[in-house]
Length: 457
Ligand SMILES: O=c1ccn([C@@H]2O[C@H](COP(=O)(O)OP(=O)(O)O[C@H]3O[C@H](CO)[C@@H](O)[C@H](O)[C@H]3O)[C@@H](O)[C@H]2O)c(=O)[nH]1
Image (cartoon, rainbow, N blue to C red):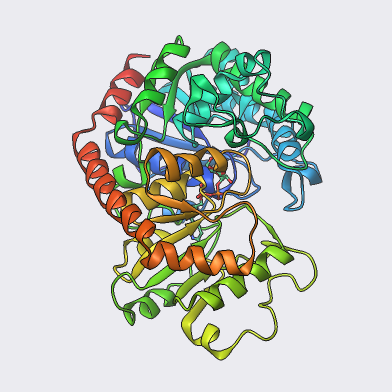
């Protein structure tokens, strides 16, 4: 292992935590937020990471970074890869390099108290366990999603999954996971059902077999029953350490270098009245077909609402890629701003933003809840359908865009969330939920409890 560890101070007596994030924005951000929070509580932190989508050490001068120098197959790194195949390839490609890097680190340092790996790294969970070091799993999705993965064998036996199209009982509620319906359970269109089932089983089995603890980026104000259910399912302790981005001190912790935010949009927002702008972003992974993209553009045009729209390069599939459709009128262009990447936390905190059209990735969902902004939910894949159901039906802080994205529906839903009766109700609920989240953050001892636990390992 090349040990380009960045040591800033001698840590002779401090205990060390080694973190291993999954190399995607939605996973790196919460893991690095956790890293900063542990450091602020007196622990030394080393981040083991892949060369693929490596985090930027310059943004975290007090953390140590060590690359595992993996060599990955094309399907593990390609933006066109099927997501399940990508996760399987990442796990198998990183298992040996991770084990070697961790073994070298353990030889080099005697202060390692435990390892925290992303909950999707089932292979790393097993590898760390086999090296005899306590290992904890950080789930970067919701407690509801993680609970549904743990319940997977029971759901399969009851016939709710596997989820082949012809077998789906879409609108049926899943009793033990209410308010989730069958259609809300984790799904990845186009992925092989057996591969998805195998992945979920490996993730759940690895946690059960190897984890000394599970960390959840969630909190009681939004998921108390779901968190309690997980505690019952697991034989190791669970810590609800979220919402990590709010627990974290310092500015805009979600930005860590994979994308460069276009900060000019903040000045653009400054020129708008309070609650007048719709913020549109589908996160860092989701891709939409060209047809859907065009309907979104025409729908925004027809709504008459000012908007800030993140169109990530490569996020549109099909001819014309992410070029705006021809013929959009001047009104659209003068009313809207399109950026490749936004400083999302600052955008959501801006008083000009009246609502958030989101794919309901868990980070965006938490960020929307904590900003007190009503949401328009357009889940694309995986856990996003679970999160969208909570946004619209459990917490009542958002509206669905709907299964079919067409311009007339988009325009109507945008107007509704910005200024309609349903939107007003969601805005009031969002305001109340934000207050509850603030209270929960102020009163949370979960991170202190976690540190005590780590020191006891
Ligand atoms: O212009 C942008 C767009 C996004 N973000 C940030 O990027 C993150 C995106 O994370 P998330 O909302 O969770 O979406 P994904 O990037 O899609 O995250 C992946 O990881 C999540 C956590 O496991 C899952 O919930 C998602 O389904 C999965 O796609 C958030 O922190 C955003 O603030 C920006 O800063 N600027």
